[in-house]
Image 1 (tube, rainbow, N blue to C red):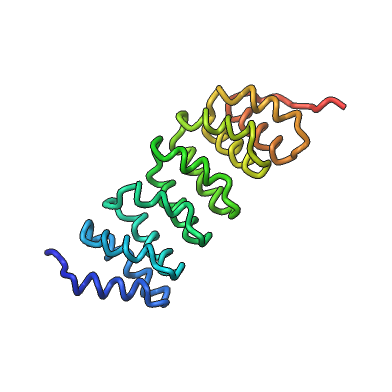
Image 2 (cartoon, rainbow, N blue to C red; image 1 turned 120 degrees about the horizontal axis):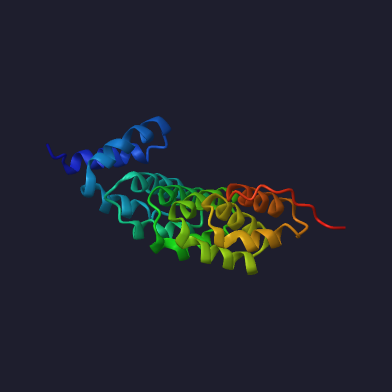
Length: 195
């Protein structure tokens, strides 16, 4: 049985009620409305209220009816929590087409966004390796750490030379992820930096 507009409006009111339990309870019901809910959720996702945007992106991210390209712009939202919701949603449905957006989001000033983007890049897998290797050449250190962590989790042999080179750097975090990546690739060696 198809639900009506009244049900949609009621669920949207619950979603934006500022009552977390009511909002959370409305999520699966909005997802169950399928394509019928998408236009209203997309409208809500452009609200000036970041809390309403977060809830809209939360539902859009769970709905299999949401086109991925509708979620990508939220990686650049002004609110960190909305960017986090978008990164989480994209990590579930990641594919090669979103690589440029994911690589850009690695540099997000919010560390949670970067960590969630790693999950998406790992899901993309081998096609992400060239872009991640490029990040290691010219990005700020925090972004390089995230890229190296993604490479360690992807376990692609093309990253070995870069990981070996990183072992000579002074960053403990970079060294950690380089060593982790090398170990995951079966190169269990002890690396000693010469004095």
